[in-house]
Image (cartoon, rainbow over all chains, first blue to last red):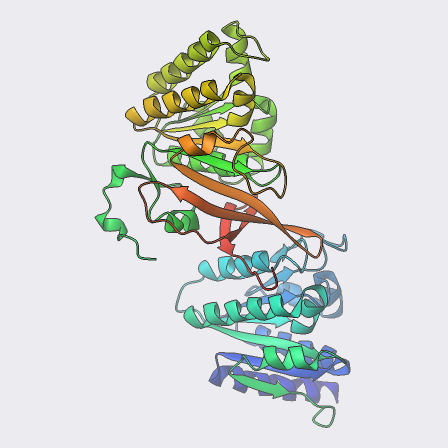
Length: 193
Length: 252
């Protein structure tokens, strides 16, 4: 059953990102695990693409413990923004540890530095997991500014963006404002799952 | 801001720092022969910025010299080794020269605490001689504040920096002088003289965000070039050294 759900989500994400430069995914917390599984399945499916995954939600170690196959994906680079602050950063291949999720400029720079080394013909993708957690660590206004910069730069450099927004009480207005900067919004609902 | 396309620049008129965004902000580089004050409090990245400037020059074949007063040489080199821009061979080959100014002062028999007019003149001569003999195109004094502390009057400070800057400019040598200020103060030097004699001011600061410190960088003044004056974020990593990035400033 889970596999069917994950496959369904993967197809939905795939077709949306094929048609749009940036997509925002609004999802309830309980569906987070299925969604990232679907995302990594999509990432794994095409070795000719380059993916950068910014995690503010879970430490890299935690994600790789749950989904061990991700450590084998060669076209994927992580930017882990929470492990270092929590004292959890162990040196790992293809993982960049940023000191704190408040270091937004550093996160932006690391993203662009990775893509700078990729040739222009290669398809490039960026995942931001998640806008909700960026807001937890920063003022919403500065996250909005950060996301504007990201959207503008990725558009200019032909990079597709997938940003996750985990629905949380009291955050709706900020998340809606951010998510609507994307070209397309996917709303994941329990009924769909 | 419109810059002159790089191809139209007369190469030897601008001294490229080799730090991509900084050169963009400077419209190509620092005008050759300038004396530039690199201002900042402790930990803002003055020494790293200056060292990267020197090493990037050496990689293009431009000889440079770094005079340290605040840090012993062994500590300086130890810190440098962690940066990937650092290449030991550049020091061994003499393209980058690291000199402890306190040792020179001692050898000259100068008072370590306060310089007389004669002492200052002797020190100036030796600095000029070294720059001339090594034929350096880039020179750093880290820090001019420590040196000014030993000069006893504002007139001596003014005279020293002016004469040093003029002689080095005549050699087409571009000089960076680091200036130490207290944290979160918008001032350029403790003595208030250095900035008026300098051709340029690079201001390194910090902004606090949720208790974390974000390094900032701003070109306050640069004679001879239509430079950018926006405040940017300055990031330092062992992999890339100094990098500049747009500063997010919501609710600043």
